[in-house]
Image (tube, rainbow, N blue to C red; front, side):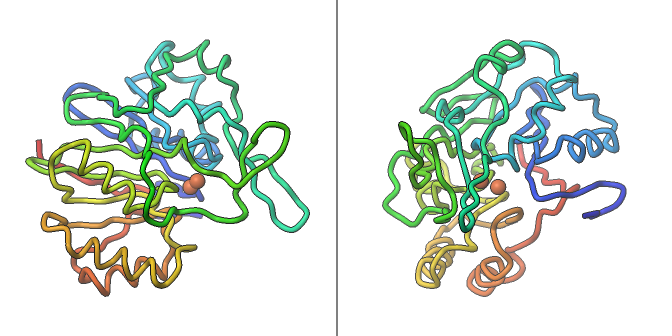
Length: 268
Ligand SMILES: [Fe+2]
Ligand SMILES: [Fe+2]
């Protein structure tokens, strides 16, 4: 797939976050090839990346890590949830495929400084992880095909590893999601409780394609009720029909897209 040439796209997600304190890479895409190509187009040497954060274990967010590791400064921090290292699978018919992190905890710890915590972690001034989304009274962004290792067997994935980033945007916050398997409304409620500032922007993968029509309707009206929400830039696994449905409720002027090479500027 080629989008916004000379940038490349793929089914995967990676956001480079630039702050006055340093560069953070949030997720690494699927292949590594696309990530390294796009960094090169931007003129960014991967050795200038100061920190990594991973939204969750799935291959379309962590698959670029093996290729990227060769180029990173040794010892930079990696922010994630410890459940990242649990094996993940997808099942279609009688075929089960491994879709989790391709590196072991020991392999990563040998190259990076692991910062694994269920609480929100500050990465730079104005940049935090959400920490674990513990309360999930609303719908999750899941699929019956997604499984995890539990003991000797496989069970439905509970996505305990799923986290997002929170970025300061002036007096308000931006929520940047990987896949948002924990559920968009659960994640938003968690952010509002943990960060004490309104959310003005939401971007990234919102995983709404498999959500029921009722839940999607409820989601749209909950978003419409957020007084500070200015802009939604969903991408990745959000689902086209869901994006159109949200645009109908929120107004098309508030709902954009975020293909490869999208730049989002935030207030300080
Ligand atoms: Fe995912
Ligand atoms: Fe994803």
